[in-house]
View: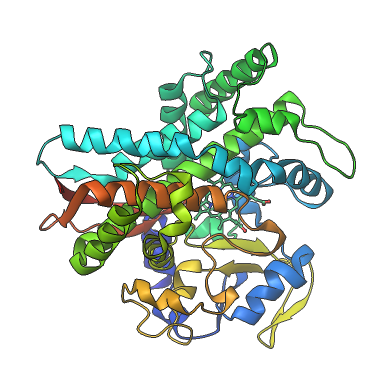
Length: 432
Ligand code: HEM
């Protein structure tokens, strides 16, 4: 494709700007209006995310896309404003708190099995079904029992936001000048404003009542304090961060589960092993938080799904000053992209990289060759929460149901804000 045609094509699918070259070379650079680099070399990535972190803040594109929905929250903030929020929020996701919240995950997984059984032998879109599960979980652990919180309303607003505002185009990623027309970027301002109002009301309501027996994410964040500055979140900072957890936390985990089921549907041997493990470990039909450590094969399936279909298919940064990556000059203002999708399928880093092979996880790869959650100080704060939820849900589903593919309905991976399967993930599910 010529440059113009490829720019047009990538409006729909950012994945097509990650050329095959990116799965074979340590670094690919180019210039389309602005200088850009795709970095797949683990040492250079470590420099970007850890050693020279301050030189590589999140790109303006990322911030502009997300700020209308989640303000200057943890996901977007930089420097001191990021640091204190991260310190205040860190205990929220401690192992103990994640464990305490796992009954919510188990209940949502059990409800999903009931829904799937009730829908009979017809094929189901498992992306849709998994989004219901993970949205149930994140809204229950964020605004549990708040009558002021209109769950369906918020869900609709967030999905509309992701669908509309998240159509990242190559123009955005490569930082083309603003005068280039960018269709389809009409923000759902009304939906976002309504979502914020609902969250504000729920936070104001919560301040009026005592926390429940098991503190949820709102209670924990309300109690959060930066140990260094003693700063606590104002109601609007609290709201922006809670909405960040919802936006960052539900679709990504749903995608992980949908792709895991898809891969298992095509590999019945792997599915049988996953089922045998789950049935041996589970005490009853539903997995619990305590079971998670005893489900290593299920975890390998999830790690492999996150490798092949990382929900955050790429992250981008803007260089603040000069640097050298892989011996190549980086200049101030350059866009530096970490194409996680290409990194995870790199021929120099993985044997037979496009093959689904959960047992490859018996040997861990280089830390900076596998980055579904990013790394360094800005690593995903919700990673252990997401993995706990994914293992509980997948184990519960495979223990109760057998998944098989639906002929002619293969999803194509499309990268909008996250890497999504176009048309959904249609599978058959039968009770076992
Ligand atoms: C499988 C599910 C998930 C995936 C693949 C994922 C992926 C990521 C990635 C790649 C980043 C780093 C982005 C960058 O460096 O530009 C990130 C950051 C973040 N994630 Fe997740 N995430 C997941 C689940 C969650 C959950 C469940 C939550 C919260 C409940 C969450 C909250 C956040 C937040 C707040 C940040 C920003 C952290 C910071 O900058 O300090 N994520 N996530």
